[in-house]
Amino acid sequence: MSGVANFTQIGIIRGMFTYIDPTVRERLAEQGTLFQIDRDGRRLEPGTLSSPGGHTISVLGPIPLPLTLCSAHYEVLWYACVRNTELGKIEELADDLRAQNGQRSFATLASYMAVNSVMLVGDPDTWKNPLVRVHSSCLTGDVFGSERCECGPQMQTALGRITAEGGGMLVYMAGHEGRGIGLWAKAATYLLQDAGENTYQANRSLGLPDDSRDFGDAASLLKYFLGGKPFRLLTNNPKKVNDLGDYGVEGISRVKHVTGVTDSNRRYLSAKQDWGHELSEEDIDGA
Image 1 (cartoon, rainbow, N blue to C red):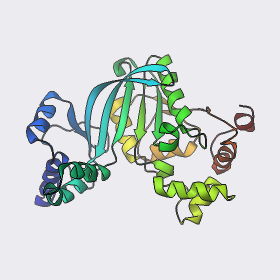
Image 2: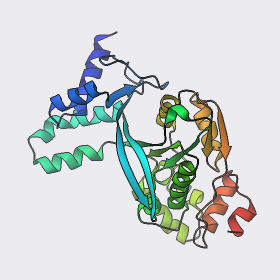
Image 3: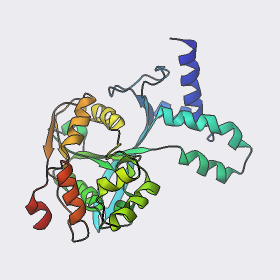
Image 4: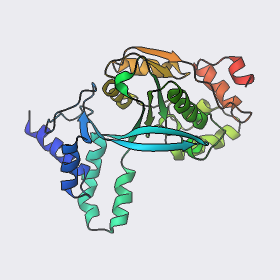
C-alpha cells in the first residue's frame, strides 16, 4: 500500500477523535464498540488500512437506546456511523480549532460530520426476511412534527411495524435533508411551493436536482448488518430500491409504506406520485 494511503488513513483515524483523549478511542476499539466496515459491508480488522476513496465507514455501537415516540415505547440498539471522508474534514480543521474556545471547537467540528444511525430491533441472528426502513432525515417532519410531508409518521410507523414483527432495522440517513439539498435550501423550496410550485419544480427553480441523495453508505450498512439476508424494504419509492441495488444490495422486496396523509400534504404526495412513487389515488385521497 502506498505511503499516501497510509498517511491518509492515519490522518483520518487521528482526526476521528482529535478532541478526545486517544486512550478512549483505543479502549472502545478493544471493546469492539468502535470498528470500521468497507464499502461491501465487510468488517475490517483493527489496523487495516483502506485506500482513499474506499468509502470506509466507522461505526460506534451497540448503544442501548430506549425510545418513546408518540407514547409508543421501543427498545433498540443504536449504532452511530460516519464515512471516513467526513472524519478527514475534521482533521483539516482540528489544528486551527485547538487554540480556540473548546465549546466553539466542538460545534464547528460537529457541523462537518453527517453521522448516520442504525437502529436494531431484536436479535439479527434470528431474522428471516426482516422489515427494514432506510429513512432520510427530515428535521421539520421527524422533530417538529410538520404535516407538510409524511416523514415523521413514516419513521414512527416503521419502528412500530418492525417491533410488531419482533425484529428488523431502521437506517437513518443524516445527510438527506430535503432529498439531499439541505435544510436552508429546503426552507426556500417551501416558500416557492407556497407560491404555486410543487416540491420538484421548486428544486429546479433553485438549480438543484430533483433528488440528490446518495445511498452508498446505506448500502454498506445494510450489507454489514443483514449479512446478505433477504429483506423487505418499507418504501413507496422504487428509485430507492434501484439505487440500493446499484450499490450491490440484493434480496430486496419493496413493501408499501403509506401513513401520515393529511390535507396539508396531499399536494406534496401527488407530486411524488407523478415523479414515480408507488402511490394510488386511494392512498392519497382515501386516508
